[in-house]
Length: 270
Image 1 (cartoon, one colour):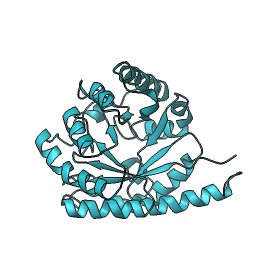
Image 2 (cartoon, rainbow, N blue to C red; image 1 turned 180 degrees about the vertical axis):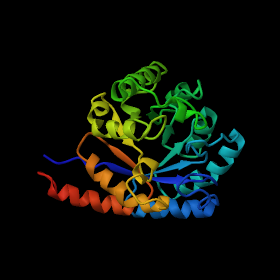
Image 3 (cartoon, helix red, strand yellow; image 1 turned 90 degrees about the vertical axis):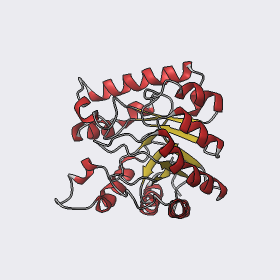
């Protein structure tokens, strides 16, 4: 029996203010080149976002978001790359589907824009539904749970049911526990320890924990976000084989190499 190796989604932020690489790929040409590089290094999907969702970030307007996304999405699609668009706005999502995007990655799980699920259903594209409780400027204050695994699973289930009722094919839905979104470090670790619970909900599971601040707590003070790649890779290996179908990462190559090692040491791996 073969083992399942999680797919890698490369993070491409076309923003000036993302926590890890804000400003590096705001230029469309630089962004497209970076997307091509990540695809060559093992990413099967490039996830493009034009609005930072780091804690405390304020929202940009829709016109700015679309203007940042459009040339990058078009350019990557022309390169034959499968593109996901990280957006909470239905209009931005549909504009990018028109440009060739195959996946909508909605960190609000359909809550930020009431039109999102219906329009995704009509477009017939894949949909990532993340656990979310509020926008970046308020999410830290919303990190209160009775039992984080029970609560997150229930809230994801509610939004999943709404998405299906809106017409999204359940086979096209991927669930994301929302690591770092309205969650403190202890919440993140507990969700990761029990990730099989979300996998048992019957959908693909995407985990986006690369370079996040809770991993930075394992490193010396004063480190840069890029120095979190080692612990991010270790987490990818720890999640492999546990129902996670995709990992959203900043540097695909070391994750790919580590997962290849993991695969070789599994029974049935080759």
